[in-house]
Length: 92
Image (cartoon, rainbow, N blue to C red; front, top):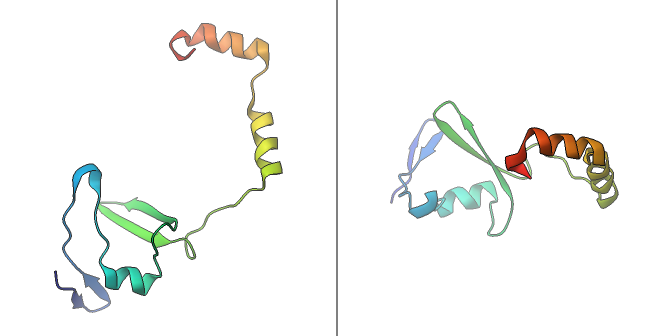
């Protein structure tokens, strides 16, 4: 398909495949620096989807030590876990 340029906007029609897969046009990937296997963020704003390369998307990186600390802090005590299991038996 052909890329259409109108003002600051470039657009191209893409086909949505099974499981919602689409192919980002090569020219867009090259311009944005999106490469196979890399992480990108997609967000929904109103009725639009915005895909941002990792370099410009805001995200946080945690060390293994920080992750272990957070998991430890989130762990329920045995007493609280038992109360939760009684309150929500379908989650046990």
